[in-house]
Image (cartoon, rainbow, N blue to C red; front, side, top):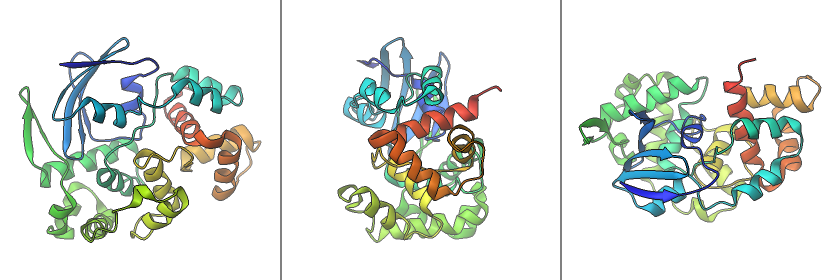
Length: 274
């Protein structure tokens, strides 16, 4: 296996933080990760990352944001004890920059759902329409391309447990096949978000997720039910607050890396025992 030494990174906290869904747990605290057309086995030994598969070290660095100034980011968002506690409890968590197509479908699946169900949808969709492969005897499927799903009937897409989301997956596949995703990474944050919202089934929150977890906009601040509840509890004295007000506050309060603060708070809320 190839290896990469890195400080300030926790593989399990990053993969299992609810921002990425296409992975399988292996023995010895390892994972098989599928990122679009790329797949690799990865495990961590202290500050050493071991990996092998059809990806390069550059892909690993980009996917897990290992090129980001981690200590600077944490210092920037550590505004108070609330987020400080979330950071200390989840140190090593990083924002991923995953395959755009896979990310779009993943967060379309997030509508009125939860993390286990989203993972199930993505894996079942791959099993139905993705190419079957084997890695060291472990069978899995690549994520299906948008060209493949363009040719699939909406009713068959629904068999992956998509429910009402099946029509939106189909819409997204057609949108991508028309090349309307090209150039997204060259747009600024607000323009990219608005462009993504052209796809039926993608509202502001899902578009913000895609901007943060694929396009690399660190200043995206998605507000879902978890973040709404946390932000109201921490910063609005428990009062019910409009989503756009929470988003505006989060961006202004946490600054250019507010998306990282959002993910620490989100993961902390999901995993907190009390």
